Length: 454
Image 1: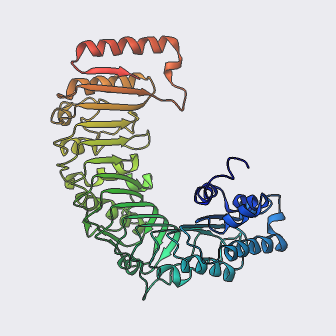
Image 2: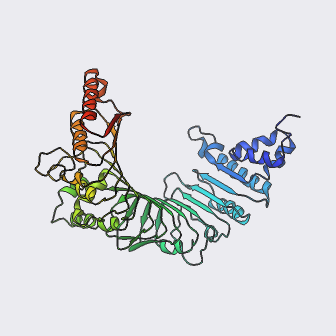
Image 3: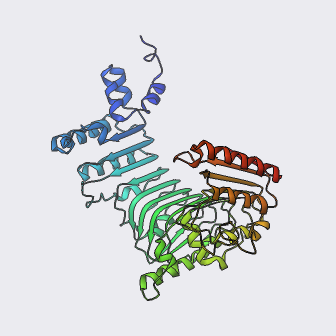
């Protein structure tokens, strides 16, 4: 007898759980014992792209699809009523939606804890799979992931998932999102990707929610957050019309990546209704940031900095902020930086990913791009002790800005500069590299701050 066969059944089932269901099924050819083990594997990973032949056109043949569906039926029949922890189903072919309903109903009846569905019924993406109501009436589900444009627009009425802690939805339209959230009293982690809300006013309200990730959203109306227990918040998307309520009093970490049309942001047409609407949206962004004012760690994208420049006069004070990270590029400006730095009275660490930015006369004194009388004023009131610069390219403009920071940040103790790794830089040229190193040595002598090029 080989060593593997001598292992107890529980351990062998655990090993099979790391394989796709097709791979696990193939082990049944080894012996009768392995066939019996498959009936008790608590993790099923079913992916039609693994099961079907990948050759051009072959996977779409009716007999191949029928073979795949029969395989899933046999696996579930073999397992009968044995407990199941996770069921992952990925179907990118034209499977029978009634068969899919049966598979999902089977695992729900067996008390599945983790349900992961990626279902596309047709290659054109026009026919969306209508999720059966049973998915929102489970007393055991702890994690639910829906992908592929699954239709949940019907959600309403008698839905209740008392144990659900994690919900991930990718590509969906919502009409009754608030009703869904109210049916999830234990929800702690919510991730929404490529979501369009049809509601007149969207309110993400949950007393239990701790982690919220929103990516590529579009909200044509107002967007509110009543999430008092939230600890982590990542928001990537276009600016909503307004943010009437933003309750995140326990927020620790926030990443805000606002998308914008730069030309309309800088030069709006006062006679064009769309441009007027965009300008109004940008002016209301301060309400979102007012709700973030208790955050400890904050990341801002280049677009977010540009949007914030439209509401600098309403910028809140971030009294708990210890670490601020910003990303820059040549198309987006630093107009909001002076106010932002002045409004972080307890800032300890500043991370700048890319020093080069769009230069305007409104960049203020945060940079040294334009000569001005009040040079460095916003920096002198900033208590930052650690400055981390990433994406350094070795240009003289960057070196001038580094010196500017060393001169005007009064509490700065350490500056770490990380060279750009993904693109060629000026530092490839030996003469430039030598000059930069000499300047770094001089900077170290002129300042009490420890400067390191890494």
